[in-house]
Image 1: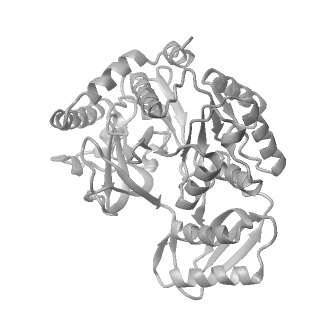
Image 2: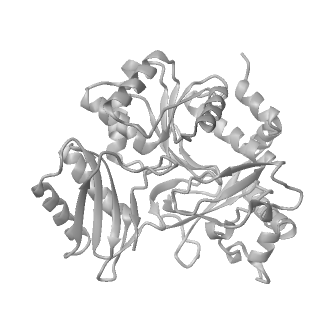
Image 3: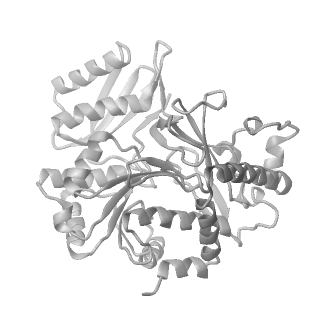
Length: 436
């Protein structure tokens, strides 16, 4: 059978075969050899950009680098300039892979990857999905990602999806009628796997629960569901496992890098140590030991077109104490670095605290479908929600009471029932944000 996915990469100038050979060599290293490989690749990518990238040379200036931890952390603000000014020597917009971030973090930017780096990323993704019997050349994907609503842009994306054996569902409409159309498509198509934004796939599962349906009955060919881009809470995982009856796999990544971690069949959230180097830093950019929570900082070991060296992704998390250099394990994600609520007392609270508490309360009463929390003033939080019926006063009081226990008394909570939750252009659900 024609390997259309491989062919499309190769026809676009991405050297997949050479990338697969490189990946196999990395995977064949023992722990001692890997440690030497990692040290060499870190030094190589650093020297490359110091020599060939004007932006990176300017960022480091005259700073003396004696060890890896001396290297300054890169942030999205460093990339707020035209892409042509950020590319390394020998690279132009015509000979690199170009894309842009969704902007869900508030700082969208255009980025680039050289073609070998991009091919290596895909070789590694294909290897990891193969753990679950997914072959991008032959397996059909039910895709729950955003899409442009402009006619021609939409048609171009649909064609790209067709070549990649994907069917993209409209995640901007989860009315009952729209979900019924989705399920009709599942019933008529031999999908092999589901992949997409966590919140969208959870909405589908909630409908199945309400109707006492199982996706495995509707589409028996499904093998696995991979959720990404948004937090996967234990209750949501349990719901997905119940209603889909297939393995639920948690993916963590970023567009400007690649897949950072993917759950393996042993249930470990295995960090990508083949093409990335992941660190956890404290708020003063000091490296934290395994087991401690901090900012996630990632180095792309192969991207020679655009520097991504000690790049702060914008998330917080913990690497498991069982981690090694060759096999780092992501223990948990704890939220985004910019999702912090400042309270009147001066106390700071992670936005995911609000979300986790509210989600637990809403799940218990089963009425609310979706919600987001917005801090509008230092003492005021707006809880926007969609539901079958408006929340009762006693329900609102109970939510406020629980928040007071976890946070501090005297805060104001405004509940606003909406027909739909604004998901932004990307289609991602930004679960908490502060306007303060």
